[in-house]
Amino acid sequence: PLLFLAMFSQQPQDLVVVAGQPVTLPCSIPGYHGVVLWIKNGLALGVGRDLSGYPRYTVIGDHGSGEHHLRIQRVELTDDAVFECQAVQAAMRSRPARLTVLVPPEDPVISGGPVVSLRAGDPLNLTCHADNAKPAASIIWIRNGEVLNGAMYSKTLLRDGKRESTVSTLYLSPSNIETGQQIICKASNKAVPNGKETSVTIDIQHLPLVNLSVEPQPVLEGNLVKFHCSAKANPPVTHYRWAKGGSIIKEVSGDTYEVIVDHSFFTEPVSCEVTNPLGSTNISRNVDVYFGPRMAAEPQSLQVDLGSDAVFNCAWTGNPSLTIVWMKRGSGVVLSNENLLTLKSVRQEDAGKYVCRAVVPRVGAGEKEVSLTVNGPPTISSTQTQQALHGEKGQIKCFIRSTPPPDRIVSASGLSKSGTSGRYTVETVNTEEGVISTLTMSNIVPADFQTIYNCTAWNSFGSDTEIIRLKEQESLPVAVIIGIAVGAFVAVIVLMGTIGAFCCTHLKGVVSAKNDIRVEIVHKDHNAARENEEHTSMKQLMVSVSVTKYYFPLYFFSCSFANIESRPCCCMFSLADR
Image 1 (spheres, one colour):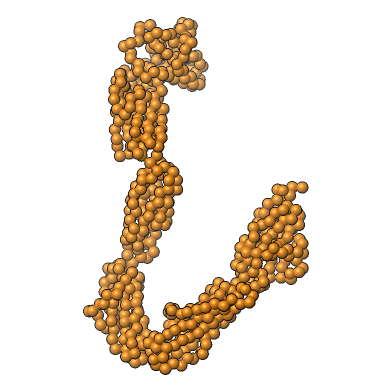
Image 2: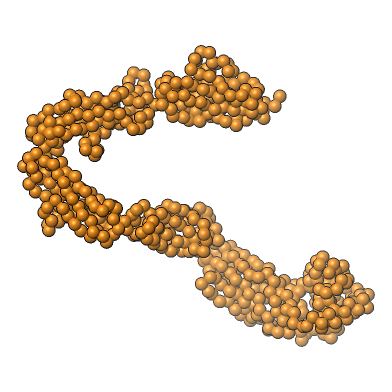
């Protein structure tokens, strides 16, 4: 009844198996107890767990747990197909799984072997074939442990449409072979990665067979290295010639070359050319020189828009294999171990210095620093509560990060960037980290501590605003504060009725909190000289209450002065918990 809830917990996956080996294709559907079919190339193998038509196929697993795994004994080429597990009543089909059957090639055969006789001056063509393989066999020719290049090969698809036969023909000129030489044909595919091989022996005169040794190897840059060129030739060797990176080394003529190596020997091979009467043989070797990181592609600093991708490219060369690490300066997080560092959909916090560091183990390290600048709307980070002393000059600082720089900055006073208005002065200073906008108030009055200040910055990408409050910095001794608090408490009890009579119906801004008194003044400029004597005592009372509430449990109030000169105040009473 709950078949619709059935889900595959295991499904068959693509598998590669060598012919003759067993294989299991998993299929698990917990909670499903209906019919399960295995499909091969679109055809059902049987109903349920009955696969009697396929003797090598068996459904295994705990049926009660919903396990219906397909086991194939001794995989054959006919099993190379697409398999699928289906839950019939639930109308569910697993993902199709490709079972790829690999077939090793037959033993390779070289035509004319095992001994090939050749007259001096005649070319040599060797043919090797490896048949009946899936996939087609790859054939290489090996002489003295070295792979011979230049062979030609062809493949033929057999009638079953799956197996192939491969034929490889190696051409060797008379100057590149010698008597007694053994040449190996090695055939391999995925079924036999180690390959199968056969060989022939050549009986002929030959050009010099050369081996170039390098000692010591590996070697640290700046140390002495000895090259030795040993050759077997029939007729004997008559001349040696050395070169580095294609340039002849005239001062060396024997079979040995000694030199102090630098990093160039890692990429510019040293070659030894050996000559006898039949011709010359040239062999080259690179030196395994250990050297510290050398920059191959220098990364460039980037400036991108917010949401775009940033891609840094940093390439180093070094030996032994170096490790590249991309990190952001100041962070311990590895961002990439590749030459490329890609930052997707960059955010403003992605801006900063990035370091591409390369390390060659036991040899040395190098690094390059680049900058990422992100164009986006400004971000403002400031302390949301700042302090000042009553009656003194006070400042509120607003720190703005913005790329491109802000077109406009407006402070709580309404001043843009820099200027003076009444008691307010705004100064804007540019630094390497960003812009600092400072709002200075010449004479702090109690209402300044109740005002909500904001700092807003704009650029072409948008804007940001920070709300800042000014808190009165305590300067009185604790004993004095306690005395004032007690007096204020008594004053509050006596004056509660009087103050209530003066409450106004028009309230510009009152902020009442469970555990605090906050008096918020909406207008920006408060001039103490303009306040009349009628309201002076009321404001002093408010200051007293603000001090008292931090030390004694009491009833207190918060007021908003809509217009001190012309209107009465309106008060809100609330119960303090502290």
